[in-house]
Image: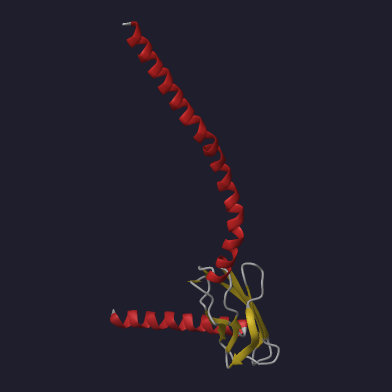
Amino acid sequence: MRTSIRFLATAVSMIVLSLAGAAAASAHAALLSSNPVENTSLPTNPERVSATFNEQMQAAFAAMTVIGPDGGQYSDGDVAVQGATLNVGVRPGGPAGVYTVNYRATSADGHVVSGAWSYTVTESPPAPAASSSPVAAPPAATPTAAPAAPTDEGMPVWPFIVGASVIVAAGAIWAVRRRS
Ligand SMILES: [Cu+2]
């Protein structure tokens, strides 16, 4: 019983390993991991993004770009190739949103590997927000001035109404007292 289970487990693992080997052979260079990991969220952009492959990569013609949510180019400097890893610097201060890293490189066997992955930045940098608020402040000041105008018109009306009703009431009381 135990030996049959062990035999089955060995057979299954051999099949899995042979399938994995076949997949790797047909795909040539393949992306093994990325930093940041695909579809993860970070508060701010990392200093660098990197992609690690299952083969050594050639330094010549390696390209890696980071495109921000505004369509801007956020990769900074030259692409570095270290063994099986490509990495590139990222400009600081990018807006919150989805960033896409595109890569294209030639692996040791001469085949070109290219692809892309995305990650999300959750916090907008404080500097652009601070510079945009003084610009937004003057238009905000004019709408608040408009509601203030009716209260200025209302101010003189109320003392007159109160004053007039006091005079009328006093006159009525005086008239009633005088009649009796
Ligand atoms: Cu290949």
